[in-house]
Length: 130
Image (cartoon, rainbow, N blue to C red; front, top):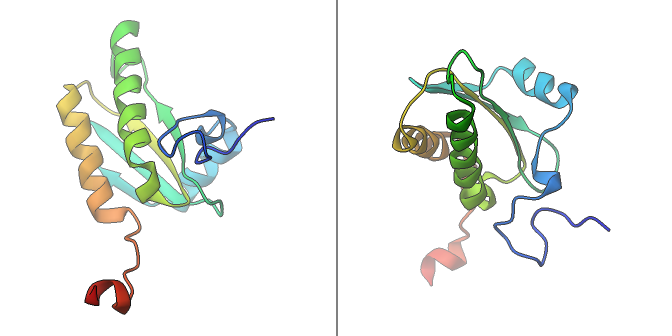
């Protein structure tokens, strides 16, 4: 039996259900046309109607030539997503790498995306008053 990505196993797991796999899923995110463009990354996103976020990665050979560097870039981006997936709610996110960069460049652009577009948790009046 497959568990959801945010199950009792751990809130920060990156499992099977956390990945965009089908062409139609990628296409629906691109069609929605919500994007944050940066120097190294384009981050496309849309609501998915689920309780958990999903990630799709596009790392072309034209942007990063060596396979080892492409794989490292994917690991860095997956880890950034995994650590912040609770803040994303039900978003489908597709990250397209446009140019090679340092790991820190990718993390900074991801943090900018989170600050600008991640759904903010609702704070009730009772929580504010303590």
